[in-house]
Image (cartoon, rainbow, N blue to C red; front, side, top):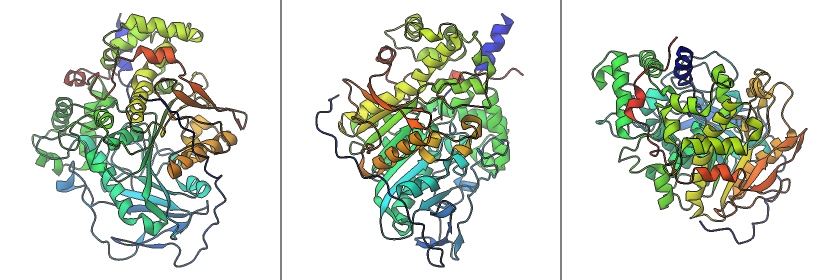
Length: 571
């Protein structure tokens, strides 16, 4: 019994989201032309200098042949009275800004320096990066990248997220952004308007910067696509449902994260009370006087002593920034003019085995994980039982019969990522019946660092196929590269969607828009270097249908204040 208790308590530290209508009847638009080679701009005094509304910036010619501008401030430093508050536009910087290196990552738990994580961390972190084929007047499509990391970790400076290869191959302008994380971006205070959503408001201000300045970088402010993975995809959902973001973008791509992580005010308020407690202060003024390292230390204690450590921070329905949950706003038509492309990997939840080896053991049965993680149990629809769901998953995945932990992870994949993603597609297809596209990524990376784990196609496995930088995550992709046919196919699809609202192109099967009748879904896969992607109607439809009565709108099932009590660690 003691061993079971140890398992249940330990599992709490990792099983969470950290990380993540009418049918279509008219013909597809013709596929856009194949992307042509980009002629590298000549190196010269004028080519790397751009005049923004805040002053001149100077970039450099990257190895990929595009012009890079890194670490451009888009807001005042969020320090002092601006800590926890909405961002404020910067003042002119006067002299030429040398935009030659990434700005620091926003405060986060210290991690081992690597190509994955940016070890340069500071509270003065609100910068963005631009990669452009050339500084000219072509007004290219703009792709605005929002990094993942569970609203707790990571940085636009991670090698995996570099925008240079995408910009070079597809002749687009790529922008990536730093936004406040954890307690700094998502602590909620009743008397600070916009708090609890500061990290998302950072993204809004960066998008406003794009509107005001991107023409000077060769981009088109009237053709901006937001895209992101995991927490970046949750951010895409949030921006689609946020009144303040209206008009700042024109298409959206969500990778592995629907509208399922929003908090109610009572939950967000309780997380801030715990931050006060562990910081040893009683007022907001005192909290603002602490160093960012002291605030981070308090945040780590909050995470270490709560039942759901990686679900503490996300957006909050505060009545102002978000008058209603984003999915409700989307379903009501908040972003009715926005084409949407969303998807997940086939085996999202298996990545959690990397975080805790206990999840790789047969003892991690569906019932055990539901006991350990209340949100998982609450996600079962009211008209169903947990036993019905467990039986259905065993029935539909007989190959997992000897691995009950993988059955648990299949259910969690659906409850936490796949079904919320489909809810978002279902909400938007009512307004964009010919312009919503759904995919699933099925290719199994080699994951050489985890030879004894059956990770399948885990959370994040598609990232290098979109950015083109597998060397940014050698633990997953190894050192031999990734299938070039599939990489080209996906990069072209993402860019085609950004340019036209349609991901179809000549080197892939016809991809029909999503509908709630036959639910066409593009399954991205490869054999050797060749893409073997195919369109399939309603893949795993019976398990999808199990969740039909559950809205997954970020409020249902709820995260409750009592989830923040107890202990997530025992050693």
